[in-house]
Length: 351
Image 1 (cartoon, rainbow, N blue to C red):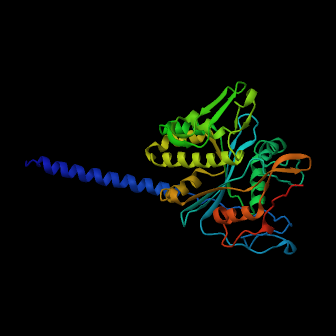
Image 2 (image 1 turned 90 degrees about the vertical axis):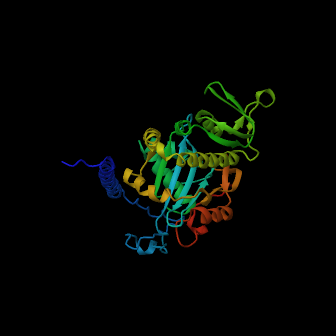
């Protein structure tokens, strides 16, 4: 019996390996495609005048309340991103995000935590109090639904989905990727023994661990003024901190996406530190477009306004600049093919 040469045996073995590997890849791709689910889109909330503006011509709305129909951009979704304050339970960070998966554009806009709102039936006037107040009235998850509605009314756009993060995610994600290089924008010197919180950084580029990254995004005040007095760490107070938070989110996201081999570790961290109404199939749907995303196409901004407004006995509220805010909404967030206009938003002005 003639024996096959070692080269021929190797060739047959390689052929079988390639066939099996190809079958596994095709099977895995098929499972991936079968599992993906395109995320839903929300209806627009009523305008301040009570008129319903909808992108769904089949919506059951009384004709007297039916406003103009708006057309959504193709495959464009809006999200509410927020983080819970570790002490108060308020949403310490509130951001709206729009992802245009066709044109690969992402807009990320911070909504200042003291933004003035006035929603019928509620006593709070700061937007960061919506989340805990809603959870008390409509436990256990009514707070996030109330906040989605409030943010949608302020911006004049629907909020399709939410992502609420436990701030531990900063620590765990940053440590998972070996730390991040970040330009700390201001001097930070804050001590709170009751929280065992001690934040000390000089401005400039430095390598941060997860714990340090969290300290940087949390810092609003310094406590080393005359006689131990407390003062704003940023010249523009909380607005400066929102810029730092945006930059940190961008920095961490770029580092995470640069290490796709850690996807299993990321998934485990997200399962513990993130609450969202996006299903696993929805998240898988975003994988393919996200792999094509270039961070040069990420636009960030903060809604402009005045932080010294008063309203119904409350002070130091953030009154939005309507004209400036509309410009940012239309540049960064608008999911429609036509502009968001003043009659579509609910931006309360102080007394």
